[in-house]
Image (cartoon, rainbow, N blue to C red):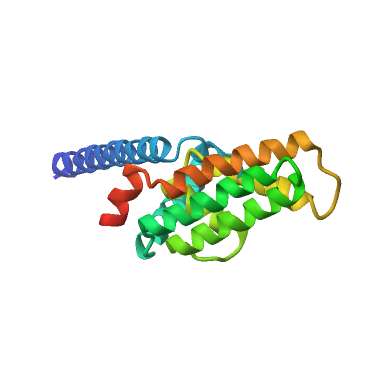
Length: 187
């Protein structure tokens, strides 16, 4: 009888260890998938949330949220309209850098709204963008921070120029939908 309990205990321990190994492999695979999918945004989330586990849960929540939204590509006429607005905005930068940066911020919001992104807080918009555009969301954060400072303090022309470059990177990616975005939108 003792031998049977001993074998049962050993089998239970082996099963638990195997389940732990399988769980850890799945967790690492999911971590690698999120790290690859979100790029620099993954590291930012880990830093912001204090641990990889909490950051990964938050990034997975972002993905689930975006799956419920109806984000769409722009129609050709819309794309042309936004491109013309952007080109005009860039031309005005020389004469009015502050005004151009403020307009660029507004144009990005309008572009997002047209594509179907919800217009909640800036942080939520940035989180939403990070799902389909993880490589340029940091550009959005940097440019928006500069645009926000315009109302409160003096901002150098060089900073304004950098804000426009950051906005342009996001604008270009959002106007010209990437293959990743198209795949998600088609699903």
